[in-house]
Image: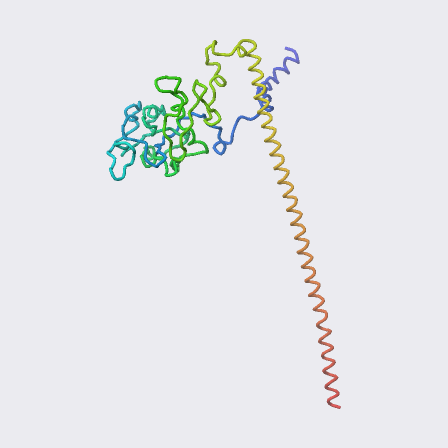
Length: 328
């Protein structure tokens, strides 16, 4: 073994830093969780809510279909006849008891699909934990939305902005009996605080992705489509070139965003440094002014102290003079 091979063998551990050095120039993908979180998917499955109509009446009619279809047997519902004087729901019955055991729930959302009135939907809030079993069993008082239509937020839940928007959106992307003519058409009532929710994007052109936040399948999951459904420009070598360009554009966008963040961070640091410098200068000026005022006070006190003995001596001589004149 030569000297070069021996030296190469001794420095072989540097090869482990190759990936580290490569990532030094790449944009960061980590976030400061839980203070900063990534956007959730438009059809995120989370904690359930019991909705109300726009007039405040509950949508649940106590049919117990959600409890019957639940594969985990985590829903317990008991219906009761509506009081004639003060009806709770528009139907003959309403959900008198409604409980969900989240120690069993698997968030399959079969309950949402079985509900005939869209009373139960799932929000996007899924980060909640319990310290005892009783907190894990949500009652009707905790599931029914507030008087303004917003979900009740319990102390052990981490709600973020947008978690209550477009809940259970796939239920508004289907069409009755598979008829494409009705796909994307509004066939549900409004909800308290949110009005009539927009239909989710399906296969028909009746879709508003900007309003619902949904993403076209051909753009995000093209690899899962059949070959005949993929455009010719995205196949073979031409498709590889297109994907390389798209990846380069995405990386360029990330780098631009990182540069903008670094520029804003530098500007904030510079402004903070300038403010600190201005505060130090102002503090120095205030200190100098205070010292000058103190010196002025001391000088005035010294002058007053010198003048007072002179005045006392002159008064004393004047009194002596008057006394001598009186004796004469």
